[in-house]
Image 1 (cartoon, helix red, strand yellow):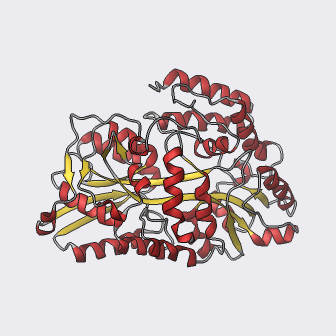
Image 2 (cartoon, rainbow, N blue to C red; image 1 turned 60 degrees about the horizontal axis):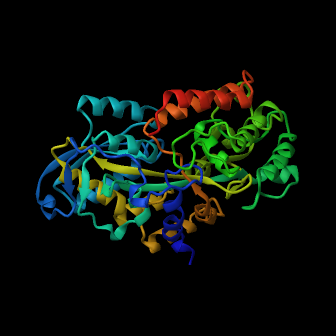
Image 3 (cartoon, one colour; image 1 turned 180 degrees about the vertical axis):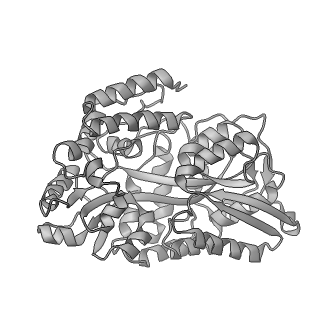
Length: 440
C-alpha cells in the first residue's frame, strides 16, 4: 500500500542520508545524526511521561515560523483542540516570518528571554543543541512518531526535540505552457538535459515567458551537486570539496540557465517579482519548490498545473526538510511546554488538521491519516511527493552552517551576475570556507 511509503522510505533513506551531505555516508547512526556533542552544563531534563502536568495551571509561550504566510489559522485550530484536552495549559503563540525568525531567536536566547518552547529548522538544530540551550526530553511515547524522523533530533542518544513536520521539494509545472509549446509533460525519469530542452521551447513562446526558475543559492546548490554525484564536504566531514568537478558541472548547469540560454530570468528581468509570483502569473514553465506551495498555487493560479519528481543529473536527489519542536532549558514551565509540543507533533488530531489544510506532512506513523493526503487536489499527481522520498538528501549540517551557506550563496550570485566565472566562484568559496570554518 502506498500509504506506508512515508514510514518505510523515511526509515530506509533518511537513516543513511541525514546530515551526511549530498548522499555521502559516515559511521553515525540515526540517533547521532546531529553530530554535535551537546553541552552538559546548562541543559536540563523534562519528562514527557509526567502525568501530573494536566493538573497544573500554566501559561507558556511558543514561537514558530512555519505557520507564517498562510497557516496561522490552522495552528490556532490546533491549539484550540489542544486546549480542550488540556484546559489548564494556555499557550501564547508567536508566529514570526522566516526571514526574521532566527535573528530574533538568537537575540532572545542570548538575552535569556527565549520562549518556553519553539521551533527550529534542521539546519540550526545542531548548533542550538551544542550550545546547551535545549532541554532533554525523556519519557516520550514514541508510538505515534516516525522513528527515523524522531531520531533526527537526538544527540548522543538523548532527545532534544520532536519532529513537528516533514516536507520535501518537487518539480511544479504549468501544463498550459507545455501544451502551447507542444511538448510532453515532465516525467519522474527526466534528467536536466530533458528539462533544458523543454525550457528552451517554453521560453520561445514569448519575450516575457521563461522555462524555469531555480534559485541560485546554497540550499539549491547542495541538492543539485548531489544530483551530479558531488557534495560540499568529504565523506568524514573533515574537508570542504566545494570546487570538485561534479560540483562544477552542477553549478554550471544552474548558472548557465541565466547567463547563457536565459531560460531563467536575470534579477533585472524579474523586476522585483518573486519566483512564486512569476509562476502564478502564468509566465513560468517550471519551478522546483516545496510542497508547502500547493495551497498558494491552488488559490492563485488560473491555469492547469501539476507536479513530478525533480529532474536529476547523473542521479536523483531532492530536499528533505523537518523542523524540531524544542523546550527552552531555562524555562520554569518545561512540563507544560513539553506537553504542548509533543501533542502538536504527534497527535492524530493535529496531524489531520495539518493535512486537511494542505500544509506540510506530519512526521507520524498513522497510515490512515497519511493516506488522506493523496486524496487532496490539486496537484493531481500528489503521489510524486511520496515517490520523491526515494531520493532524499539533506544539507551537510555543521555548527557554522549559516556562514558556509552565506559564503557559497554569495559566490554563486556573483557568477550569476557575470562578475566572476563559475569556476572562480567555487574556488573562492572553497578557499574562504576552508579559512573561516573549523570542521572538526
